[in-house]
Image: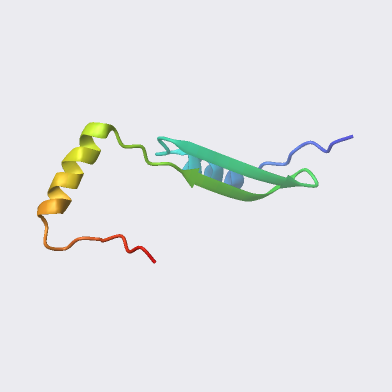
Length: 71
């Protein structure tokens, strides 16, 4: 039978910190022997087509550009 998960205030705060401010993404909580041992946060950034086009125009007019190199 699985052990009940032990969460103290410190782990609850750590989890809340990882979830707060997360717009798109996930928080993975790893449990071993009924105890939280790790928290992984994966954050995604989403951009709509209009903002990408605007950013591309701004970048195109800038002297400092990132360029793709085929190799």
